[in-house]
Length: 484
Ligand code: NAP
Image (cartoon, rainbow, N blue to C red; front, side):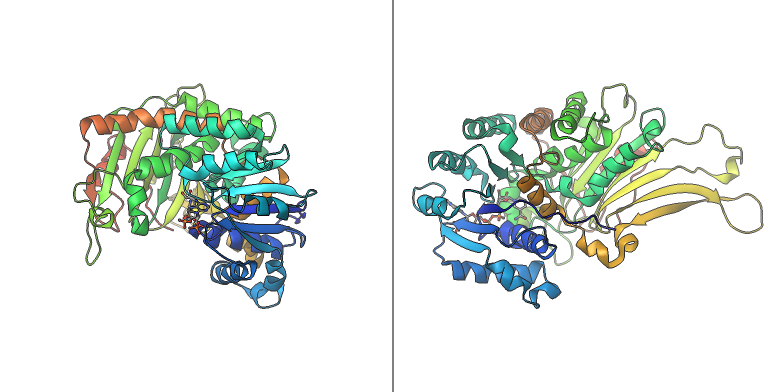
C-alpha cells in the first residue's frame, strides 16, 4: 500500500523555462498529481518564467492543456484542476537580461520555501544563478534544481560547479537525475539494506556479473542537433547508467542520509578501472524500411556519434574485484525496456547431474515499463517423470501488487520535486559525483576522437550491433533479451 501522503511546507516554485517541453510534459503534470494527492497545499505558488509575453491567465491555459494531455484522469474533470490553476502564475523573465526579475521577487512570499527550477538550456544556468543572487533570491533557505546535462566534459562540469558555488551552497543545489527518483531504484536500496537475505550474497564471491540495460525504441527525433554533439556515452552512460551502477555496487551507508549515501556512490565511481577500447562497442542505427538512419536524423552523412553503447567495466575494490558490470543503452532497439539484472553464480556442484542443465538465480530490477522486481529461482518441474529442473520467477510487479493504488505512486519527477521542497538531497547528485563520472568518461571519448572511431551500424528494432553480443559471448555470457 502506498505510504501516507504528508503535505510539504508551503512553497513558491519558479520554473525557468516554464513554457518548455520538460515543464509541460513532466514538471507541471507532476505537480498537479501531487496536488491531487494532497501533498501540494493550496497556498503553494507555481510560477512559470520565460521570455514569452504571457498573462497569468494565458499561462494557466497552457498549464491546463499540459495537465490534460500528460496527467489526465478524473481529477481534471471534477474541479481539482481549476483549484490547482489558482496556484499558477507567470512572469516574463529573460535569464540574460534584467527585465521581469523585480516583478518575480515581488510575487514570492517570505514565509514560503523558495525553489527555482532551471528547466532551460544549460548555457543559461550560470546567468540565472547570478541573477538570483543579484536580486536577493539566493538566500540561505532557497534552493535550485539543475537539469541535465550537467556539463559536456570534466572541464565544463567543473566550471559549472564553480559558477553555481559562487551563489549557492552545495546543500542548496539539486542536480536532478530522474532515474534516481524511480520507485524501483529506491526499492533496490530497500531490498539490499532492509533484508538480511541479499546483502551477504552481494559480492564477487556469489555474483557472476551484473547487467544494466536502458533500451529505447525511439530514435533521436527532433533532438538530433543536441544529440549529435553528445552521443549515448554523454547522454546516458555518464549520468543515468552510472547512477544505477553506483546504487547497485555501493557499500551500505551508515544512514540513509544525503551525504552518507552520496559518499558511498562517489567511492564506486572512483573505484572504476580505466577502460580499454576492446571493452566498449559503439553503434549507430541504420535506416529501416521507411525509417531514416541516425545520419539522416541528424542530417550529417558522416556523423560518428554513437546512438548505442555496450561496455564491460570493473570495480577495483574488495567487494567487486573479478565481477564484471555490463552496461548497455541505445536508441531504436527492439523494445523500450530498462532493467538491472544481478546474475548469481552457479551452485558449486549439481547433485542432479548434467542433464538437469544450468540454472542460475537472477534478481531483476525493472525500471520501465512495469516497474518491479523479479527473482528467478530454480524448482522441480511439476509432475511425475523424474527430477527435471526449471526456472520460475518470484515476481513483484508494483502494478499487480498495489492494483489501482499503484497509480498513486509518484513518478520520478513528482517525487524529486517534493524532495526539493522538503530539503532532502539524498536522491540528487553531488558536484563531486558528477565530476568523478566525467573524469572516468572523458578519456574514453578522447580515445574515440583520437582514433576517429566509427560506430558499428545496427538495424533498427534489433538488440544493437553484433559486436555487442560478442562482448558477452567472449566471456561465456549473454545479454538478457530486451523485452518489456
Ligand atoms: P525547451 O522545450 O526548448 O524549453 C526551453 C524553455 O526555456 C522555454 O520555456 C523557453 O521559453 C525558455 N527560455 C529560453 N531562453 C530563455 C531565456 N533567455 N530566459 C528565460 N527563459 C528562456 O527545452 P526543454 O526540452 O524543456 O529542456 C529544458 C532543460 O531540461 C534542458 O536543460 C534540457 O536538457 C533538460 N531536459 C529536458 C528533457 C525533456 O524531456 N525535454 C529531459 C531531460 C532534461 P521562451 O522561449 O519563451 O523564453
